[in-house]
Amino acid sequence: MRSYIPNDLPIQGLDYQRLFSLVGEANAELARYDGLLQGITNPQVMLSPLTIQEAVLSSKIEGTQATVDEVLEQEAGIRYEGRKLDDIQEVINYRTALYDAYEYLKERPITLSFIKQIHKILLNSVRGQDKSPGEFRKDQNWIGKHGCTIENATFVPPNPLQLENYLDKWQNYIENEEVDVLLQTAIVHAQFELLHPFKDGNGRIGRILIPLFLFQKRKIFQPMFYLSQYLEAHRDEYYNKLQNISRNNDWTGWIEFFLKAITSQAKDNSQKVKDIMSLYDEMKDRVHDITHSQYVIHLLDAIFNKPIFKTSDFITATNIQKPTAMGLLKQLKDHNILKELQPGKGRRAAVLCFPALLNISEGRKVF
Image 1: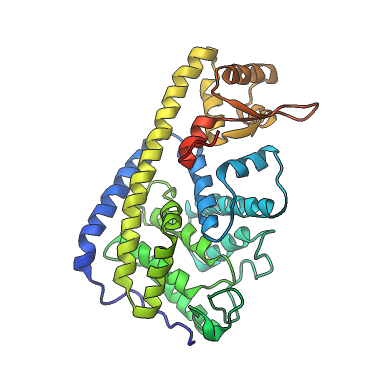
Image 2: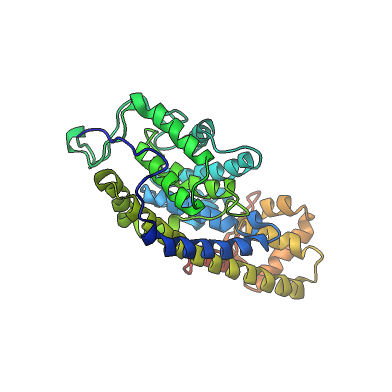
C-alpha cells in the first residue's frame, strides 16, 4: 500500500451548505458551556474530576482499562500492580501533559517543539517509552491488525522523509485564521492523526490538542473542553470518518461528525458542570450546618479537587491543624458525606472518598 499524501491546508472543496447549520449549533452549545466555565471561581479545582475523566477516556480509546476512582485510589495510597498499574500511569501521564500544556499556553502558542515535549510526558515510563518519546518518527509506520505487513495495512501514514514538510504546513495552518474556529479544529485534529508523526501516542496527543487549540483561539475561557467521552462512545464511527478522508477524501463527512461531537459533548459537559456547581453550593450549606467551621471553603475545595485522598494529604492541602482537620473529617464521615475506603493503621493515614462528586464525574454510581 502506498503512503498517504495529505491534502494541502486549508482544505478546498468543502460542502459548506451541509456544514452551515451544524457549525451554528456547535458554536452555540460551546458558548453556553464556556459561559458556565467563566462563572466558576476556580474551575481547575472544582472540575478536576472531569480532567481525570478525560485522561481516562482518551487513554481507554487506546486500550487502557483504568477508571477515575482507580487512578485516585492509586494516588491516595491504595496500590495496584501489573497491567492495571501501567494503565493508571498512562492516565496520570495524560493528566500531567494536560496541566503542563495549560501552563505553557498561558503565554505561548502551540508549536511542534511544544507538541514533542507533551509527547515525552505522555510516554514517560509507560507502554511506548521505547518508541522515541518526544521525537517525530524517522521510519515508515502503518496501521492495521496486529502483526500485519505494510501491504496489508489499513492505513500507511506519509513517508518520514516528507513528514517534516507536512508538519511545518500544519503548524502554519494552526497559526492562521479559518472561516470558523470549530471547523478549523476538526481539520487540525484530523490532519494531525493522518500525519501520524510519532511512533506511538498519536491519538492521545491529537485529542489533547482539541481543548488547547480552542483555548489558543480564545474560543473557550479555560482549556477544559473534553471530547473523549463522545469519541470513545462512537469509537468505530470516529475511526471510520478519519479513514474516509484518506480513502475517499471525505473531509465534509469528517467535519460533520466532529461538529456533532462538539454539540453533544458541550451539552453533556454543561450538565456535569451544573451538577458539580449545584453539589458545591449544597455542600457549602450542609457542611457549614454540620461543622459550624471557619474552614468550610478550604475543606470543600480540597475534596472537590481530590475526591479520593489520604487524611495526611488533606491536612497538607488545607493547612488546617491536624486535630481540627481530623475532627472535621470525622463529622463528614458520620453524616455520610465522606466514606472510608481504607482505615488508618499505625503511621499509615486513612483513605477517604467523596462519593457524590465521583458519581457525577463518572456518570454512574461508583460508591
